[in-house]
Image (cartoon, rainbow, N blue to C red; front, side, top):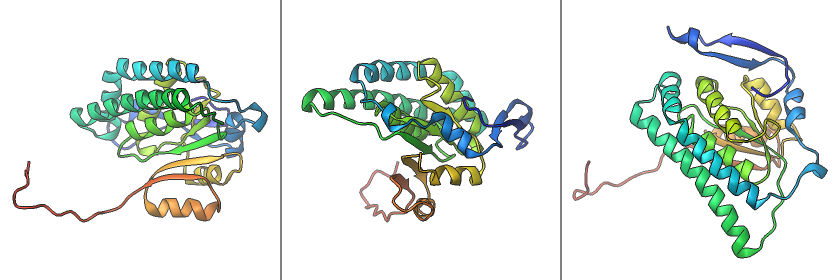
Length: 238
């Protein structure tokens, strides 16, 4: 865990396997976390297509190499079946390859120039603990931003292993911070003006809460919903 807030190591007591699931909670002020990762405007640089191409490939390969470990962690910490975990890892790899290819192609074909936004807070849900956070973190990193990764505490171990994969692939700790915290610290992060954007996957009510907490927030939200579906008599029920 790469941040300098005051820490205490706790144990998850959800079940008999808890003694193997140690993780870290932030007890210090959120300002220590943001201050350690947030960059001043004059430190923001134009994303480098060459660097992004190299990093995206390394991230994708790192996920491939850690496939077995990540699957096991999702089964242990998230209650996933093997087939469910395996699909999530494939999706995370696809994210790394897609963002790398999209950015380099856009830059090459349009000649567009890009400016990073600054520090991005990524807040994924517990039920897809690998693919969704990987997508948010990779998108923000490849666009030249620094990232605070605040996962759901229900799947903290998956988040920790995913962060290790990115570090091993070459993502610097100054660019990616894993923060395991309760809602009060998370709310303070959302409100902090040094956080330029928030990527949320979760409930619509949560997105609206973030907007009330900080009017004008640059919020990229994938929220829940139930849509009606019509199934015809000739459809393939399988």
